Image 1 (cartoon, helix red, strand yellow):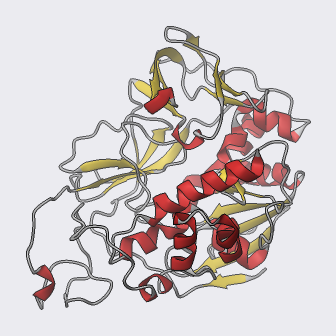
Image 2 (cartoon, one colour; image 1 turned 120 degrees about the vertical axis):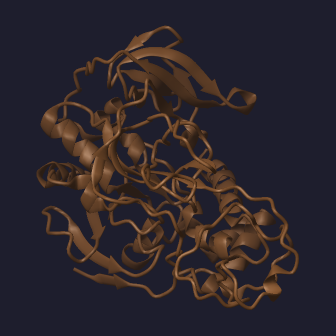
Length: 425
């Protein structure tokens, strides 16, 4: 067992943390199969509005990989096909009928067909490029993220609870496919059929890119590694041991936009509607990586709310004492926790301070040169600088502390998509 310890990073002192123990969140009348993370997939719709569906019934099939499905997270009637620009599939809305009917799961003898037919393969990401996995590209190793460090995210221990045997079943099943690396906190416990490593430090200590770089580095585009979080493994274990699909997860509702009575941890239905009362913008996801959408995202376990603000504050950086957080020590504050808003305090401009990013980037990559290479679409140079090793989430903190307000997460996400399209097609 190796121990990963990092010092570079940042635990953002953000107000509005979830409070108390786990509560139950009644399922919303409508549940959404969120398809937005899979825009690189060519979907073939298997249902239309008005069709009745059961939990686990295939709703979408991958045209490029027949037999790989996205299945229904709820039992009821398809009410709407959600589409974005150019009719891109964003999701499928299902009105619950109050009865949980599960379809019969396929044989568990063959690992890849079982994962594809049950939709469980969609909880994995593939490296390099950070794209949905392709069942034809088998991994040399699988990294299981069993720790969380992003703001407001429920701990892995909360997700697993008293289901360690179910979690172990999922790990053992994956170990038949490839070597499994389990990354967790020191006091997580021991599990079989895995290579167990521990980690500590500030965010982004939970990001798989860091674990892969230190344990099983990616050197070329053919070094295929899969990643999955602990809830995904628990979902696989549930299908194996209970012959049904897991439809609940622990989520947090947090942020200064929510009242203290609402903030907390909840056992919620996946794809639940985020129709809460808030005084700010509601995000599916944590404050660093969350997106505005009315339902809980496919991979999300946080619903956060940030108060919106467009109030101009002239010369605010000349104030000696202030209530605002500053990473660059522009001014002084005695506060230990801060109520952030959507105010950027400036607009996008050229890079002016490359050293700021190095203080929050534990990966051994040159942040600014890599981002500039992506902007210039010089993918040969970007690959040499480490593009194959990263995911968009690795640049969330760099974007947060950026004095130039450059949206590096979006730049890296678009760059990885374009590069993957060129290499994998």
